[in-house]
Amino acid sequence: MTQDELKVMVAKAALDYIPAGSVLGVGSGSTVMKFIEQIGINKVPVAAAVSSSNKTTEALKSIGVNVVDPNETQPYDVYIDGADEVDPNFNMIKGGGACLTREKILTSMAKKFICIVDKSKLVDTLGKFPLPVEIIPMAREQVARTLRALGGEPVLRKDCITDNGCEILDVHGLKITDPLALEQKINQIPGVVTVGLFAAKGADIVLYATEEGVKVLK
Ligand code: 5RP
Image 1 (tube, rainbow, N blue to C red):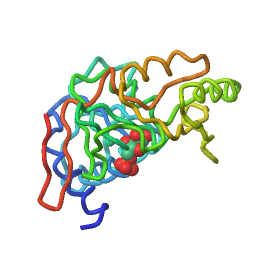
Image 2: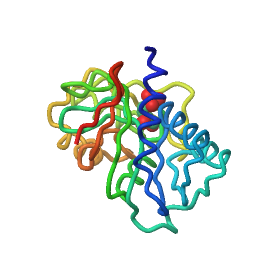
Image 3: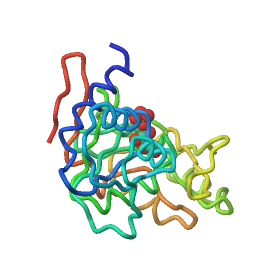
Image 4: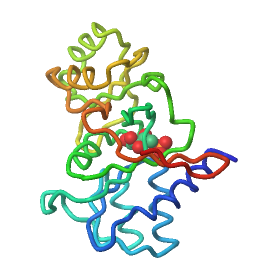
């Protein structure tokens, strides 16, 4: 099975987690795009959605879902999103698609984060996937120096301006043994908008696709 087929499989399984009659939080990335496609194909009713990126908003609107402003929404039940890496404690690296800040905002508003991935995203220790850090452009060099002092090698993501008008440094070479401590440390660097470590609020349920079907971790 290809990775794409696995993504479709887990996208279909996630349809069962869409709450009836309440707002759904929707993440970003190729797995989420397949999830949105499945909502459309299966005509699953979605009362309204909050969206983590301009691309997701466009896709949701194209299948007729009402996308609402998070400022006009109360904390809601379910947020569904992919991840770049997930560890055994459901800490995640996210931001491969440069949408980490809005994803973290929507995560903070959700009662449950349902993470949808294919099996290749499950790791023992986070850090092989370069850790995305969204930054204010004028702070780029100073943030990079601080990240080097923490043991990482930051690389500016080419041709990437986020939906918030910011840049991304991808930090290579980190072996993240204490995700929560590192999340807090990086978030405190002046000029950092968000680090793509989701540890303070990780996933609640992980659905992962394998050749044998979709498995659920709780
Ligand atoms: C976007 C993200 C995505 O969830 C993450 O990059 C996984 O993407 P994909 O489903 O394409 O593998 O965090 O910012």
